[in-house]
Amino acid sequence: MPVIVCHSVKGGAGTTFMAAHMAMSLSEAGANVTVLSVAPRDTLPMHFGLQPALTLPSLFAPAEDAVLVSGIDLRSFVRAPEDPDFIPTLRDMGYLDAGPDRVLVIDIPAADYTFARRVIPHASGLVAVLNAAPDTLALMPQVLGEASPENIAATTFVINALDETRRLSRHAAAFIRELVGPRLLGRVRLDEAVPEAIAMLQPLARYAPSSAALADVRAIGAALLPLLENPGRPWMARDSQAPTSASRAA
Ligand SMILES: Nc1ncnc2c1ncn2[C@@H]1O[C@H](COP(=O)(O)OP(=O)(O)OP(=O)(O)O)[C@@H](O)[C@H]1O
Ligand SMILES: [Mg+2]
Image 1: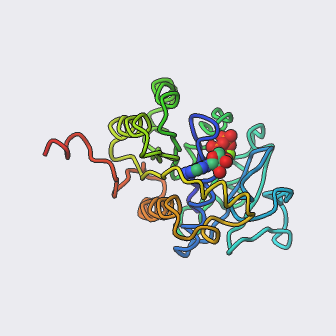
Image 2: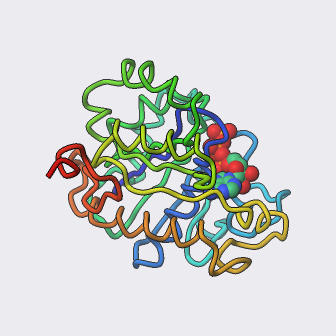
């Protein structure tokens, strides 16, 4: 089972939103998908149109206690970042076995970067969610400097909440594209329908089926699928929206 880690360099970038929608795309493509939240204050269920008060079942809860939304198994393990046996546990449960038809998406909050660094070497890859904003850009040298070459090799990027009407947002996105080149899976536009859907306790696909953000996350899901064909290999986005310096010069 490929493990996909969803993480961000900065809180509130849209990691949970992206983890939920990647899971939906992979499930719609036929994969058997589990999403694991490790956040003590969990907003994952809200992206599936579930009540905010809902507590997700533990990773270890029996199948009869599962919360399934459109076939996606939503789980929680709040102690995972402190659990030294987390990776052996995943292995024992069969989550680390290769095979694109079963996928585990782990939503790791930005603050748990030490935990993320520990999990990424065991994952097929990391989807790093970046806001097109100057503070995110300012953190990039530190983040890339701290990451191991192996973890960088396993990383793809998504720009989220891009406001194309704002010059600063456009310029920040252009800078990210330049920085990460073909590792960019895509971009998701800033879209009020995202928080509105949460307010209406509906999944985005039901609340605003023609919304810009939904089209964007679906495109990212489609770009993710080929990467799962070679689990364990370093990722490289194939259908990048970002022209590389070389392709621009050509
Ligand atoms: N493309 C978007 N357009 C508009 N709003 C968005 C978009 N993506 C996410 N949001 C909103 O931004 C807020 C933060 O998103 P989310 O909870 O996914 O962040 P996070 O990165 O998981 O934060 P943390 O690291 O603290 O867990 C939410 O209210 C979400 O609805
Ligand atoms: Mg989150």
